[in-house]
Image (cartoon, rainbow, N blue to C red; front, side, top):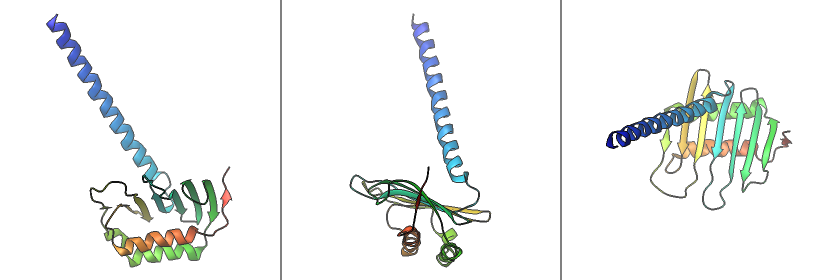
Length: 162
C-alpha cells in the first residue's frame, strides 16, 4: 500500500512540474510574440491599470505612421482606433529617443510600492530594441518621451477599427 501511495505521489509531482514548465514556456512564447509581432514597430506604449481610476490604454506606432490605439478604462475613447501620423510626428519620436539616449536607459524603474500604474515602452530602431518598464522613479527624460507619445495621439481624428 505504501509503495502504491509513493508511486502515485511521484507521478503527481512529475505531472505537476511538467505542467508548470509548459505554462512558463507558453507565457514566455506569448511575451516574445507580443514583442516581435510587428517587425516595423517604431514605438509601443502601454499604461496599466491601478486600483483607482488610472487611464488604461495602449498605443502602437509603426514606422510608416500607422497607429493603433486601444482604450481600455478611464479614457475618453474606449475600443480600438487607428490613424496615420505624419512624417513630422515620426521624426519627433525618433529625435527625442535619440536626445534622451533611450537605448542607454535602464530596463526597469521600480520599487516595491503597491497600487502604482506602470508604463511599458518598447522602442525599435533598425535591429535595436529597447523595452522599459516605468513604475516609479524614472528619469525626467523618459517621462518627457511618454508625454510626447501622449501628445501625438491626443486630439487626433481617430477612426474606429472594425
